[in-house]
Image 1 (tube, helix red, strand yellow):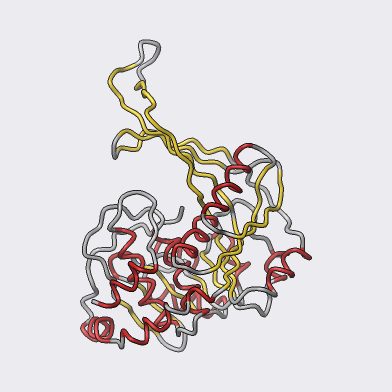
Image 2: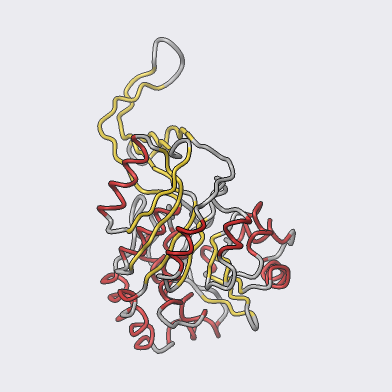
Length: 326
């Protein structure tokens, strides 16, 4: 699950954008989020099954100098592009998800979890399902085990084209596991597409409507050392709108000019999955008629809700309405 590398904590010091953020007509923003339930968003990307094992550590193994974890519980969560789809349904939107899984127990688990989350899931099959296993003790992460198949994968073009015709906007969630290829992006030409990018795949994103790198990704993709320079260069290189998510500094929008949007968060416990929340909310807001500035502000509110919760969390539509009504 993607996350922004820095913590959402305080609004920008730029007074103009601070005032813009707090005094924009919230009634207009509420009108936009009330349309979320009518939007059909197609999410394409790398699917991951996240497995969490929680246990206690009370002693060291006599066989080797390693901790012994006494397992207390385990659970499974939709990860990667599937977490973006989960965020969409949590906000009352309609998510159509397609990506690669194996004909294995992990793949069947993703199908089961997608059904529970009311996600319309159209699987493509490959050798095996990508799985990440995290072992924790209390709030302490002890170990992560990755079991993944990183190869270029090919979607059925007929299936993709059928789903594109039914959707209001397309989100590409690129985790660099092989689902996002030049063949796929050609199928999406002239469609309203937004991308949560992977720097090594920069060349694939030319001409899409919007890409949303975090600060680290933007600097890497642009070879710049300053975030505003990076945004301007990426906008020019890729001929697309850019929103850079900047953690505690909020977001910076690069389209016809440059606008800094401050963040919203009163308490911060965990930034896990915040990046997925941001792109899901941006997608729903844009499909509902928001401009980039309005969409960024709504996404900042959603991110502020999520980082105030522990673990991989999502914002609900009722929580978002409550924050916007204050």
